Length: 432
Ligand code: HEC
Ligand code: HEC
Image (cartoon, rainbow, N blue to C red; front, top):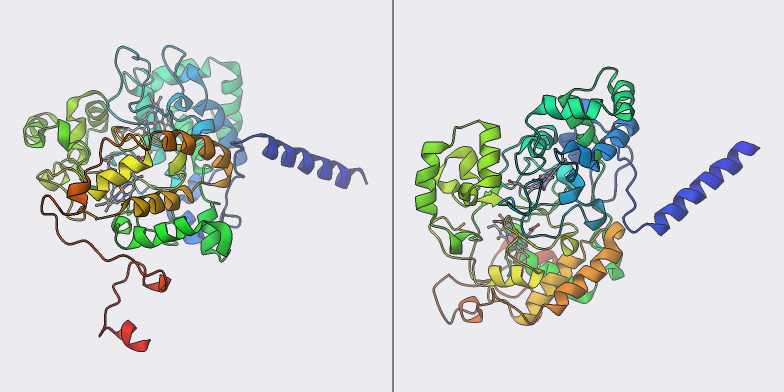
C-alpha cells in the first residue's frame, strides 16, 4: 500500500517543481512519447538509433553542458552562451568566450532548442552532427580554449565524480567522443514545441489571437516567409534547412574581395580551420561559401527555425537586428541589395498593422516552458518599437527602387488558400 502513495507523492513533487520553475526541462522524448508537433518520422530521421538519449547519458550531458571546468579558465560553459533559463541563448549580439572582453567571436549564439532537428549545425552548416558540433567550441581558442580533445578529457577525468559517471554511462574511461555523445544526448531532449500555435493547428480555435491568425495568413502569402521558413509535419521548426543570402552582412562587407581572399586560404574539408575562420576572422561573413566554395553560397546562412523566437533576441548570424520589428523592416524592404541576394527576397509592401500581425504570429510560437520569459522579452522589444533603424517605407511600398510586384493581401474568408494562388480559371476556383 505504501507504493501507490509514494508514487503519488513523487508525481506531486514533480508537478510542483514544474510549476515552480519557469524553464522546467521537458521529459526525455522517445518514439512512443513525443511532444505535440513532432512526428515519429521526424524523430527517426533526426535521431540515429545508437544516439537515442538515455536518462544516464542525458544526466551526464546536462552536467557537462553547464560545467565551466570544460574551459581553460574555469569561466565558460556551453551554458554561458546557451543559457537554458534564457531559451538557450546569451542575449548578446556576438558570443563571448574565454578571450572576452578582449576578443569576442564574430557570430551570434543560436539557440540549442530543436538543434536535434537541424539537418546541419552552425549558421554555415559546417558540422554534420551534434557530436561533431559539440567538440568545436571546446577546442576553439576564443570560446572554451582547450588545445585538443585530450586536454579537456585530462581535466574532466581528474574530477572523481566524472570519472565514475563516464564509467557508469559508457563502461570505460571517458573519451572525447563519449563526452560529445553525452552532451548531444542532453541536447536531443531540448525540443521546443507545445506552443499556442500547435494547439490552434490541432483545432483549438481560441489558442491564438486574431492578429496571430492574420499573421499566419501573411506569413504564407504576401510576406513570403514560408518560402524559406517552411512548416510541415516533417519540418515543424519553420526552416527549409537550406542556406540563403538575405543581405544581412551586405552593408558592412565587400563580398567579392572577401571571397577572393578566402579562396586562397580555406582548405576544403578542414573543419577545425573553417571553425576558426568563422569564429575569429572577417571572412566569417562569407557564410556557407567557407564550407562549399561555391560562388552562389557567398553570404548565405542557414535558415534558422522560428520556434521560441520571441525569447532569443537579438537576431541573425551577427546579432545585428534587435527586435522582431527590425526583422520585419529588413524583409519589408527586400533585404540589403548585393550580388548574391536570394531570389526569394523582394520588397513586400506590408503595412504597419500587417507587420504587427506577422510579429504576433511569431510570438504564438513560444512554447509553454518559456511563456513567462516571453512576456518580459516582448515588453522589452515593444519598448524599442519606435526606434526602427532598418525601416525604409518608401522602398517597401514601391515608391523607390524596383524590386518586383508585391503579392496580394490574403483573403481571411479563404484560409485554405493561404500560400496558394487561387485565381479565376484554376481547378480550385472552379469548384467553388
Ligand atoms: C563562447 C560562446 C559559446 C560557447 C562556449 C558555446 N557555444 Fe555553441 N554556439 C556559439 C556560436 C557563436 C554559435 C554559432 C557559430 C557559427 O555558426 O559559426 C554556436 C552554435 C552552436 C550550435 C548550432 C546550433 C544551430 O542552430 O546550428 C549548437 C548545437 C551549439 N552551439 C552547442 C554548444 C555546445 C554543446 C557547447 C559546449 C560544448 C557550446 N555550444 C559552447 C557560441 C558558443
Ligand atoms: C529567402 C529565404 C528567406 C525568406 C523569404 C525569409 N527568411 Fe527569415 N531567415 C532566412 C535566413 C537565411 C536567415 C538567417 C540569415 C542570416 O543570419 O544572415 C533568416 C533569419 C530570420 C530570423 C532570425 C532568426 C534568428 O534566430 O536569429 C527571423 C525572425 C526570420 N528570419 C523571420 C522571417 C519572416 C517573418 C519572414 C517573412 C517576412 C522571413 N523570415 C523570410 C531566410 C529567409
